Image 1 (cartoon, rainbow, N blue to C red):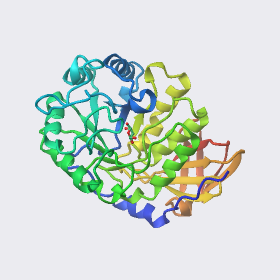
Image 2 (tube, rainbow, N blue to C red; image 1 turned 90 degrees about the vertical axis):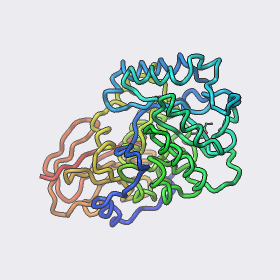
Image 3 (cartoon, protein in one colour; image 1 turned 180 degrees about the vertical axis):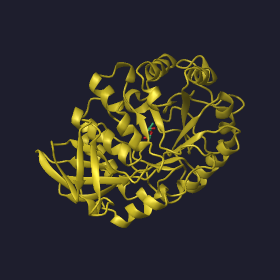
Length: 388
Ligand code: GLA
């Protein structure tokens, strides 16, 4: 079945974003490139505890992933006690995190990692198992800073129908006043088009509903995020949700497509599998330094879907050094040939480039006008094109 036709952004956006990346971001100067790390939700849901999180942190370092840039270890929902303490402070769940959050942050920092927590711009979080921060923004931001927390994912459940601009801005200011640099990851599910207003408040904002561990959900989320590309840039990123690579619901080629396209569109690379027991295939995907380098390119231009012929798609984005990142993506049921034309990907028709395949390391030398390749079903090919 053909993928739903997502809006193709006109080519001039590619040029526009190549010359003037949106000036975005919290005034904290974090997130100059998309955040990289791990989050507990996609694999563990509410079943998290101190030992599990420490094991993940150990694996992040021992597998070499930390060296590649994955630095945040983020707790999602269910880390805190059901109620605040008698002074109104958030406290860790004593049965699952008996040593508390300060100790967990110390554990991360000793390993060269960073610790993130999860909160909610409402009365209770989405699980309803812990309090939200609505009305407690300053107090909670001070608590996070005192614990040494480096990242806050801030959700949208039980929000009393108060405008998201009000609720998220309060926490944004509270974090800025907390005395600590805390990455602010806004999770409003794209409901009120946060790309259009979150740039001054947050370092990233969710553009979609929750990802599921399926091809349909993954492709749907990335299509929905496409139209917000012009709003992304150093300091503030569109977030089509965390990675499912390694969680078992898609094939290896589908996961390679998932990782490639997330990298190209400058999505946060927040891993969601159990990295302490990942397969060699999963590790190979998550460790591809050349693909990561596209995501972390300092120009910070979100790649776009620039060509679509039914199931055959071309995505591209400018990189520093006049290079272009390119993904040829086959969403169809059979192998097919895909041609990317220079006129669609921001290159002049006369440009001659070397095309470096980031997954096979093959180089196709001196290509002019277009690049044509055969791509297997549900697979992609990813290139960096370097002008001669
Ligand atoms: C919402 C968020 C998810 C996750 C869960 C936790 O659904 O969008 O990413 O944080 O809540 O309950």
